[in-house]
Image 1 (tube, one colour):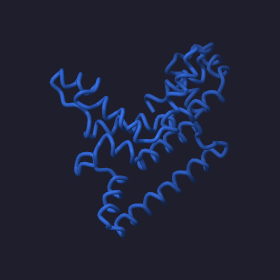
Image 2 (cartoon, one colour):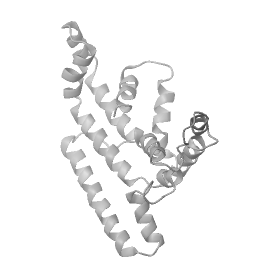
Image 3 (tube, helix red, strand yellow):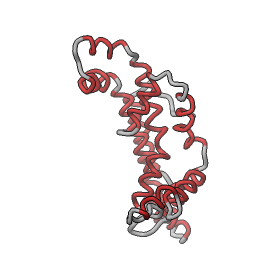
Image 4 (cartoon, helix red, strand yellow):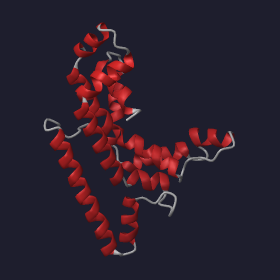
Length: 202
């Protein structure tokens, strides 16, 4: 949310010529196969990549097949699920309440805490809930960047994959049912607290 909030605010209030391009970049994970994003992240974060190579030049380890790597992948892959609900909430808010608060002497932080946050609470609830749920169910990006290493990059979705690959269908079924119930509860919460919300679209 720390990254998504300023991006969503800029997209909702800015008139830059780059706005459409940034919107398209943010929405890319919605239409790209997870393996495509995972492949480019693996190359970038690996020992010969731009980021991974720079880290190794500084005496640090590259980020491919690490927990930090899958964390970066999860953030990028879930970005539209955080940015788009917030952008819609900020757009619906408009500029008037913020301008009134500014005219009364409220500073930037005060305006955000006392005006923007309370009036866009529904958008934040939707964004946080959807992002968390989507992160729980990620598979392709996690597998490409993390490699499903036990104790390092082993997560719930890759655990289900491992059980299925090993023909342990009972264990895979239990975890799958758990994720199914969790996803239903998440969507119920989203629609309960924000009845007017429409599912994120590219």
